[in-house]
Image 1 (tube, rainbow, N blue to C red):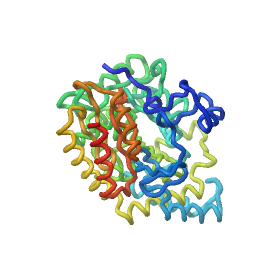
Image 2: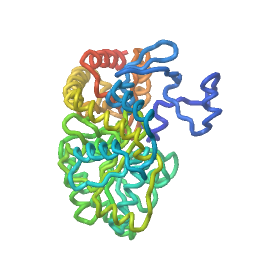
Image 3: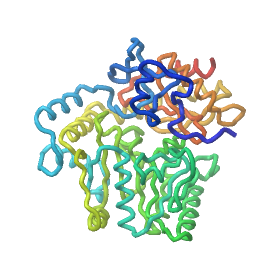
Image 4: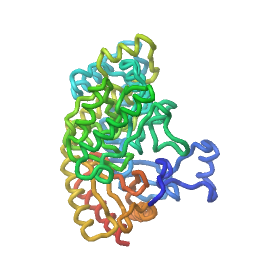
Length: 433
């Protein structure tokens, strides 16, 4: 069996082999915290739509980066940001119309009970705040996450992000359960996952922590992308809520139409989250994130702790977010995610039939996972080879999963049929080369 891999080690540049020039300059500036993609890092200078351009003139089709969700440098988002920063940018202690315009537009897409939204600058901050709200609202401390979850990088959120830990294990108040796939649960993913969560709650109770929350990225991205069958999350969510815990749906990666069938990933499962966190695609690259909660839950937290975020919810971020919502609707990007995603999945299935190196195909819309295998086992070495071969063909893609052997497909929602076909052609050559 392959070794378990830490998320930032997947497809990362290895500085121990020596560096020069601009790479060394980056390492001198960031030190041990520097993370660069690819064994030969790329210097990017511009991007548009689904494409990025490097300093050497090479153009790359971006299947890696889900932050510019409506497309790199989308003109409407650029105009909105430029106009607002030229007029006013301040914090939320002042009344500024665009901020409440954005909050109301966002709330219109959320479950009605989640009527309070706190805006932050990163998904890490949003998940940190969500956990603190859950602790205050429930009076419990225990949190359940999946074995290869990633939810951010504050001290608190790192504790519930096993895939970020290079050494050690999550603290005593955190329980992990296997990802919701057939490898762990066979044909009864819903029942098996609910049973695993129920047993995790019992272990937390035995240690005196109780259950504050089940925290899930609703597409289980870092675990290797798990979307099916629709509804599998519901029994586990109901078990936690019946025990007094909260369901926190981390929509930082699957939210904003990416899964095609719904605006949020949790909609695929018909669950009612108590808290929704979001980030990455909200501002199409402008740093913004948020947490939506029930007023009573937020009140429980605020009764004990003051909270204010200087940059969270600033007018420029709100303008960017409002533009993103307009573009998703005006350009039919949620529908595009569903239709182009179906084209990609069909193409992948055809390629997989002729390859012994492709395992399971999973996902929804424009968020897909492709397991690469050797003799039926995860093959991270081959995965890295495929990633490098696709880069040579002008396509950027990354890895995920417990062993780093799952290709993670997250192109911009504006991807068109010709670009999808170009990806499939590069992928077929990479897995057969």
